[in-house]
Length: 181
Image (cartoon, rainbow, N blue to C red):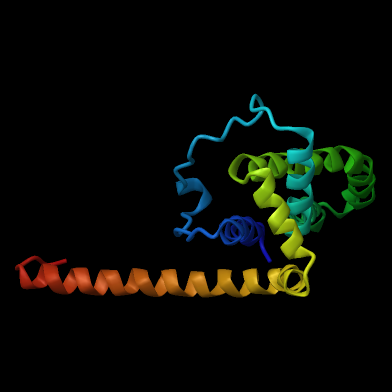
């Protein structure tokens, strides 16, 4: 799966976890980014953050973050295709960077925890956590990667077909109005 697919999967995961519908995400260069939530100043109780972290981790969001780092490292390794003499040194650098990358992953994991805490009360998070510990909740978490992959694939097919449908319909209607479209 490409990096953009992983990012799309993370977006879909957040949408599925919060029960919201996902709008088609434009290509990264075309995205109109909403201002980031500034949760750095918002105060949460230690127990609220603890249950939010448990839910964020149990939900599988962390797995998505881990895959992004590995995919970026794989992309960096592609430089050795044209510069094979760099392979050994590059692997040493990547190994040396592992502790820094773990800190980067902790940063996004902490952000996910704060996002969960921002949108869900401590009581709601406890209910979600309890669900994740049931057989159905465990099955949901276990099957989530396959569900997300299938959904991203379905969504991409649907959006492509929708684009074609809209263009056909707009052309037909504009032609009726005498426009060559």
